[in-house]
Image (cartoon, rainbow, N blue to C red):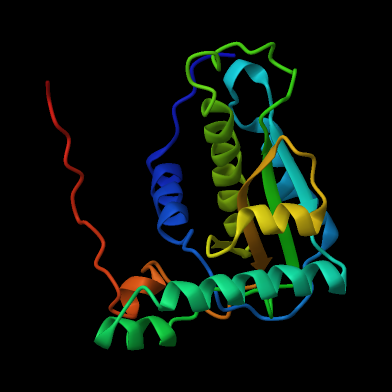
Length: 211
């Protein structure tokens, strides 16, 4: 295939896509079409992975028991996280909506198989964490694909990963990368919700150091 450059219009649209990618916490409860979800999940297969190991493992969390366990896990971890703040910051934290787990129609737990034999260890000998970075790369493509369909994704990181692995009965060598809520966002914005809420301001410039 010849080198392919893209038009100014495409680059403008791609920039808009990245700006609208946003971490979503507020979802409508409308169902997600299975064909659309499958199309987005297929982007995992396009992602780069160290040694072509493709170490991502995806569990769709659907049963009432599994969702209840994940939600309780989050609620426990969130309550504990609140104790780490005080004063105005604690009050602000308590008012943040940090999960869409009670509304999102689709929920996925994505893991890295640290023991995968695929790829024969290439590129992971000195940096085994590259397998996990590969999973994150795949998630990023999936996230962007969802946005092109009008869907949103929320990454829930306030969880006890070991407890979630036990609740989902995953193999011992799987490590949780993220728990994801997926659905139709209540609204679309190019500004992070945490910035809108005044929790933190986003850097306007990237600092690049030279050695």
